[in-house]
Length: 155
Image (tube, rainbow, N blue to C red; front, side):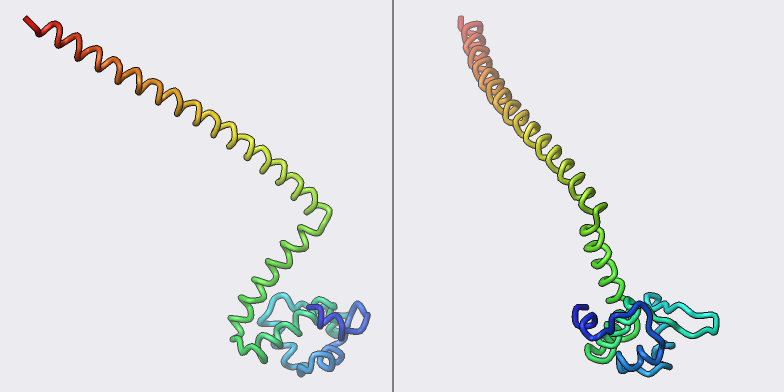
């Protein structure tokens, strides 16, 4: 939403008329979209006047693009917004200090898992060598048993 940030005035809140002017969407359409898209949640003053946050305006610009430019249905646009919200949340979480901590924790877990896998791989190779050795012993024992049986069966 870099383009949206470029055209939005540096304000915290926008009245519905300002949002209509910025987005090119009529106020009645904005009010309708509020009912269809839960991410658009303007606050209301005591006189019930809508105050849209910057994030609301950016969402409206995205909804407009999805519906008018990309020809999504309302339902399709709703689904796309959920996808974008999920990706934004993951990206935001990873950028946060808590996200950095989580990434560090996951790196430790991954390193431990790799070490366990390497150790298991080493044990598996050792077990394979033992098994091959035991197979050779079994083959030798069979030969010895066959020789013994031949000796016992001979008159």
